[in-house]
Image (cartoon, rainbow, N blue to C red; front, side, top):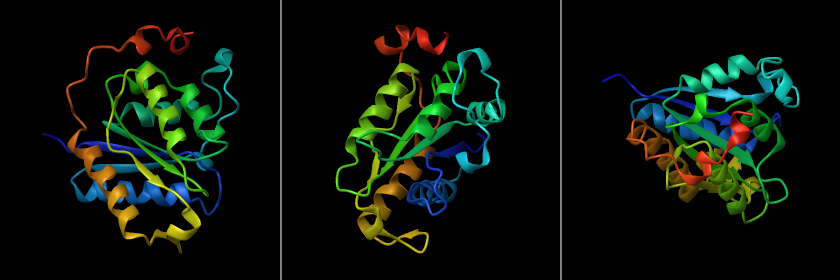
Length: 192
C-alpha cells in the first residue's frame, strides 16, 4: 500500500499566523506517522473572490488539483467573529465534490479568545455537505498568543491534540466512505 498523502490548508493570510503553526505541526505528526505531506499556504495562491462564472481564475486550478490529489485534507482556520476565515471560505468555494467527496478531513481552529468551537462546527457542516468523512477528533488552540511562541506550540496538552489530529489524518486516510448524507444530496450549490 502506498503512503497516504495529507495536505494542510492554512486559512490565514497573516505573516506570523498561529493557524499555519498549528497546521504545520499536524502535518509533521502526519509525516512521522508515515504520510507524505504538503502545506497549502493561501498566501501563495492568487484566488480572487469566488465568482461561479470564473471558476478557473488565478491559481484556482492549482489549488483544486492539490486538494484533489490528497487522501486527507486538514483545514485550519483562525476564528473570526465565531466562524472560519474569509480566505478559507473563498478557497473552499472554488472546490466541490471532485476535490472533497469521500475524502477524510481533519479540522483545526485557532482563537485569540477561549472558545474556538463554533468555527469547527461550521467547517464540519461544510464538509458534510461535500460528503467528506470528518475525523471525530478536532484540534482547537484557544488563547493562541499564550500557547505559541517563536513559531511553535509550547503548551503540552495542545501539542498532543494537534499531533493526534495529524496521526489520525493518516490512520483514517483510506476509510471506507459512508453513503451520501442528506446534506450532500441536497447541495446543489456545489454543482451550480
